[in-house]
Length: 119
Length: 206
Image (cartoon, rainbow over the protein chains, first blue to last red):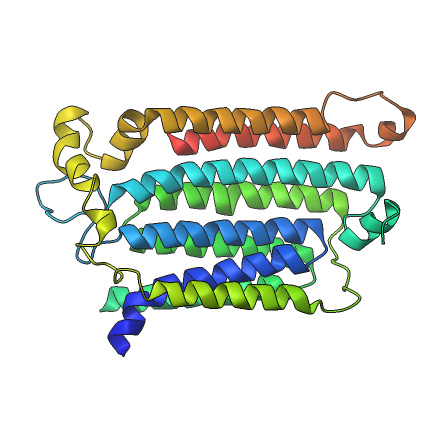
């Protein structure tokens, strides 16, 4: 039982974080809060990938004669790329938020809907 | 054993921080907590042997993202309005998705398993041959800059596009009409931060 928990704890936390981020994006009306939720979601995916590449007893994949076992470097490369792309999307989203605030005077989703004449 | 304990504590902290972000109404506190969350994630990546990822997460996630969000809060105000009602549909959707994913984790290889499929295919080749083929001790750098150089080229393209888009959104329209004139300083400040972000992240990736 304890072994099952230890074997899957990383994945479970990653899923919990993913769902918290997902809920923040879907259910909160403030646009900045939505972007923070999107960041939480992203980081949870990073955590899932890096967890899958970890090898018990391994070390960071920097070659040295003193070590024989290394963790898998491929997820690290993928996630490096993803982090940088993630901050680019965040910057673009925040730019849009500033622009929306200038045009509408609010960043709450339901007030934006009202301003656009929807209900 | 001690490593496992550290992992569990860090992961639990991450979960608690994320939940606090969801509950809090003050956006200033939310942005600060999201910086803390990124720092916890970076510590977790060190513990999972991904030191390069930890560097980038600490610099980009905890640093630049937080600064950008603070800049936006300065322009947009820092209180989140209370929603009129708690919507039930998102909660149902999120719970169902979470339950399905939770069920799927039991099919995954155990954490740290050296014989998991993900660790058997290309990674052994890189670990064994990259020093002879590329000549760098850090395998992550070898893959990023050599074996998968095109990925990195695509990444730079994405950042460039985002940088151009931010500049088009926020800069280059001074004096368009009278309404814009009262906050030219804000415009300039924001176009700059988008620019900085562009440069810094490229440094982080290298």
